[in-house]
Image (cartoon, rainbow, N blue to C red; front, side, top):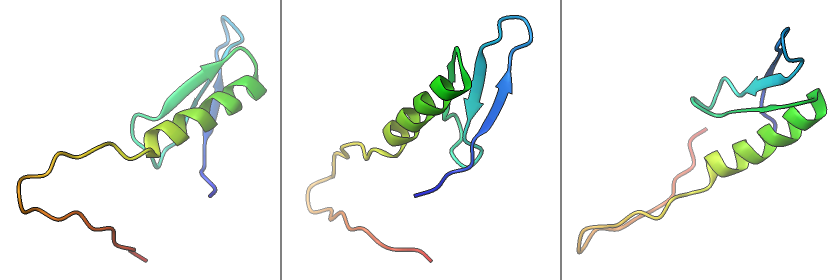
Length: 67
């Protein structure tokens, strides 16, 4: 799965900030561009990880595909 990410260098520290525009709040950083890219990969994986949902008695959970 491919995701666009935006990288910006901090002019004062030289560190890199990175975020994924399609996933609100999914951000990371690193001391190098490569480290920032590795960190955002982990952040995206965690962002997309499904959380457990507590269902009311009788409720049914299903997955659907939207194209």
